[in-house]
Image (cartoon, rainbow, N blue to C red):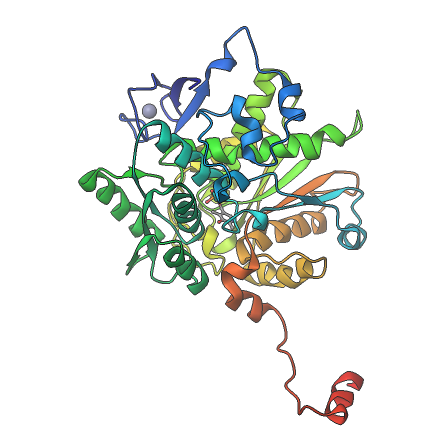
Length: 414
Ligand SMILES: *Cc1c(COP(=O)(O)O)cnc(C)c1O
Ligand SMILES: [Zn+2]
């Protein structure tokens, strides 16, 4: 294991690997994992990664704080290395010279969260833990349950009772013990912490567990291989559009680019653009106010995966954007819904949170914050199958007709 130390995002305190498990004991700040290669004279060799045959996050093992977990021929080995598309139709319509969409619905449980849960499962193997607990609006839980099923571990998942039915069905199908909380995500989060303490279960909660960001950073490594390395020299910096709820995806991706920077494999991280729903904008609010003070909101967005009152990784999510010269954008629920069929038109089926990132891109173009020359990548974080109700609300219903050619002709000619 190549963990050098942990550092607190609030007070900067440094802890050795055996000293801390979750957040900073002094102030509850998120802990960042630092790896030995940051300071070691001998660095990993990029060729080992670039030539790897492993089409998953495990191609980055030399840059991850875990040992190879094994579990060959299980879904755990299929996490990550998701495709990037260059949809010609959208590029033309938006008048962008270069546009990539990274499709995270291709992960085993159909969302970006598998990256974090796979890494947590590997960590649990190293530390001999058997039960994992997580609070989730749905996807983190489904990912945790899927990885637990892959590895024969036990998963206990707390979700708000309002979570989309598909996500709850997924949790149950993966064999997790599912507890639906008569409350919101934030209340489920707090209950899971108490459960973790009471029963000694390993807690995977987003941001609370320092290893979730280490899993999420693998998306930055893939963007480096799939996109950054293909950009011609002298091209404008890449803009990466990321939907933000707790802020752990964007802070994890930032960490990944910082790792690449410290290895000298890139010269500058891309600009990270965080997109929040207007109805769940605690981090964006702090960004616009020019402060690091994050005030909780009462989140009401229909994009359940980014519906968060108190972001659990807000500070690092703010810095990810400020330090890369990016910005935050907020979008309405209406704009989010409208984007679902727009992405559908190029063959990508997304849930509302993923559509939010695309709505942010469109808003930036409208407002001149993204120009045609700027290369942009949109992270589509979750599958539309996760929330078919939202998708159904975003498109007109199909006609129902008598099974006759006359009835058909009427519909076709209308
Ligand atoms: C969790 C999630 C997000 C937001 O990630 P945070 O780390 O909470 O900011 C966005 N989209 C989907 C589909 C998610 O599941
Ligand atoms: Zn601290």
